[in-house]
Each structure stands twice: as structure tokens, then as C-alpha cells.
Image 1: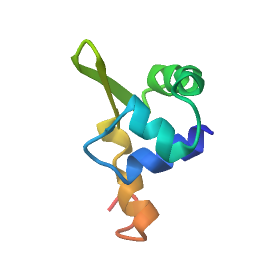
Image 2: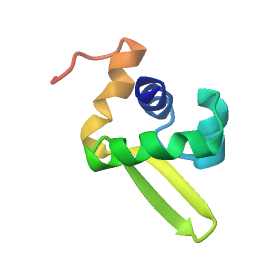
Image 3: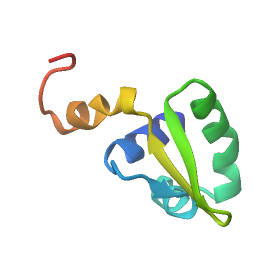
Image 4: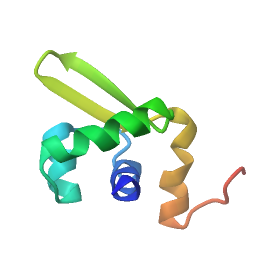
Length: 78
């Protein structure tokens, strides 16, 4: 599941809410929490809270290259 989360976020540069990410990955929001915690601790993603009720999840800047890689765009590191 972590790869599905990363892949989904790579296609959505501006990030997704917890509910939207759960819907696109195909799991309940509660199921995502454990995976999100691990991915955040390793620096793969960032979690922003624009308000107390909204959690916005996005790839960290150092992993944005995945977006181009998954689209078959420019080479990694170029």
C-alpha cells in the first residue's frame, strides 16, 4: 500500500485530503494513518493542516521527481 499512496500523490502535486487520498487508494481513512506515519517519518511525504479539520498530504519536495518519472518524462537526475 505505501507504493499506491506515493504513486497517487505523485500524480497530485498540490496534495490531497485524507479522505480523497483514501478514496483514490481504495481504503478507509483509518487504514491510511499507519502508512502515512511511516512515510512522513522517512521524509517521503508531508502533512499540512490548513485548519484543525483538514489534513493535506503531499509528497515532500525531494520526491517530486517521481511525478515526471511516472509520466515517462525527463530522466531522473536531469
